[in-house]
Length: 296
Figure 1 (tube, helix red, strand yellow):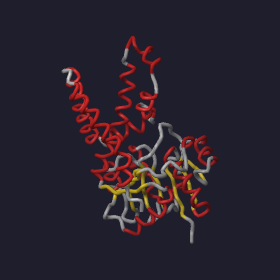
Figure 2 (cartoon, rainbow, N blue to C red):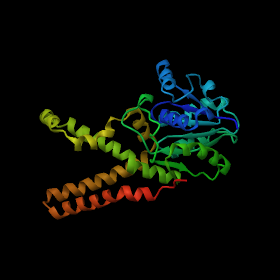
Figure 3 (cartoon, rainbow, N blue to C red):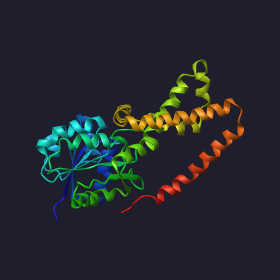
Figure 4 (cartoon, rainbow, N blue to C red):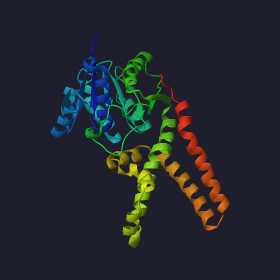
């Protein structure tokens, strides 16, 4: 049995974690190449064991790859694939870690030849830190991982990809493109914007800023942790999933407006009911989520 050849485009937190995971699971049965921009990042990717070989030469990285894992910022995915097209072998499988799916799917289907397959994916995992230095072989374990079930992709191609990705020990689930982008806006994109908004609110506290900083505890730190995420990545996400994000933000504005009106009116019961409903849903989320993932 010949070993699998995997090319990782963007050996940062996600790409690096995938490499570490698959090398730990498959050892010499997989050979991983990684595309890195700088000599420093190439050395870091190889030294930590995320890839067997790193280069800034796109042809050297993707040539003869069975699977290409796309993990750059979302706006860079389509231009990157356009550059690599001359070097992809027939039957190559592309998949990605992009947080928005409709934008990437539409762009890639305009340029991909019939002999190269794209299976959209989105591992719902991450950390507030970026770079291969923050990578972990267990980053995907027991986390949601969305695969878009495209009927145009042959089942044999999907099976080949899943045979590889199942080593991440992620909880796989399938959604269609539009549903993924709506759900991602609610449970990932808008929470990041909200976390950044809370930090911005702190920054705008004027003469009280120093006093506020002295009082910061676990609640503020936990709620705003993801505001430390990569700004380039999140700007790209907002630009490529605009409508679902705007729709969710407007609904959030409505909710906050209702709460503000209740507080202003002195309606304790309405405020109490708001917290009770939120607590009930929050307490049920973790248990319910575990029951809804396809772990096959």
